[in-house]
Image 1 (spheres, rainbow, N blue to C red):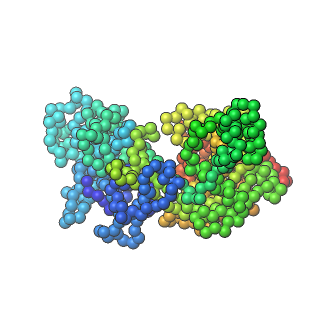
Image 2 (cartoon, rainbow, N blue to C red):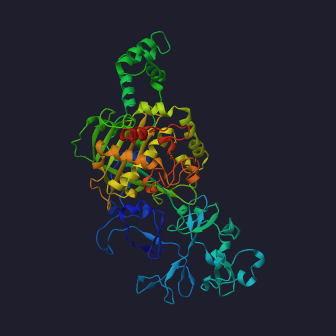
Length: 602
């Protein structure tokens, strides 16, 4: 198949038009080839060690980019025409390939009409492969009782037509593929029936459209006919990291101090003995930890397992906390944060500020986004890497872009958050989403919906909706990053809302200026006021079955949902009740609006 040169914005080459995706532009239907087809000399390497540590061995490369008009030698990505089967708008003739005219590739029928891609393609149900529907073969198959000998032995490959008729009503029954040679006609309504392609003897080629099928690519999974633009045809997996000087978490620092203490070896040697607890108490007093922590570490001795690789967010959380404690940041690197301490004495209402310990104005931050690969049809289908043709001697290439931006960071009071989430009503409310996440075949990739995550996630959405009015950025350009985990040695409880742009919506300071406590706290109060009453109440506030796979409780488009590109979990795991309360469930910010109204005399 002939490669196509086509212009895209740089950020679009990662999402939504990354490797393996179908791109529709001006009547052309194209599919992006994997990174093994990239010309490395035009693909600039991007540095982000934190991200590569999670992705595995490989290289981050930015897709080729250029400014101005493209020439023949201009750096470019390769896209293939897919599907190859098209029909003519004038004569309705079906053809599998387009041709050349004086050396130039054209998309015209022999009659002069424009060729339009067929709307259905075949997707492998488990193998994440995609291919053309073999229309000639399909049109001459079907139930054996209605296939004549003329149709069975027909060789009129160039006489297929895509016919529309109103005599069969509306929908797919009115569309059919007709063969002028044997007079065989088959409606598209037979195409979308479950296992229809399998019954017609049409098998998966076991490869992507830009790959040549071989005997080694046999796939035993069945094909399904789906619309070319269906969202399930391309389920991309991205990973992003903030490029920050990663700090060692506090728990890791304490562990190192305990191990390096002069008396620690005595605790290890006499662990369980009469002196172990006494010596462990001396170490605990000096380091500032509990005696049980010292004894537990000593019990492992030299054979203690190494801590698992820290998540990307663990290092980010530690770095943000250090910045908040440092006050004004005079640095000139790619991570500049001014920290502000918040207290109930300095800002009102106290019901809100007592739950906040710090606010950070993120004046500059660098984010690197990479595409790991994709799946097709189902979220549990086989994973396809972004670099398919890379051999064992060359490191795989991960498509990546770097974005520079600004943001606002909020740190919540850990003690008050822990007290709130220990309430039985709160935990019972969160367990509804935990059970649904565990029973879903794909939702295990989402964060564990413990109470603090749901509450902070919902607050982030409410604040994004309000910031869109005041910051100058559209809500779709704002991103969230939720730090909410209570099962690790270093508990996290924070929100980062930021915007980052590499080629279009740059960072103009409209967001970071709102990060000052005097401006942010009123905005947060306004966001809570917006969420107090939803236009879909009382249905919304009383609901616990909303959103995809019912993974939202009291949250809908009228109150808490934002653009899916802004949300880490695709607008899932949200609940207003865990923020503002409802029924018997106490909210994290339950009494904030009540105190505000009493203060204002309302």
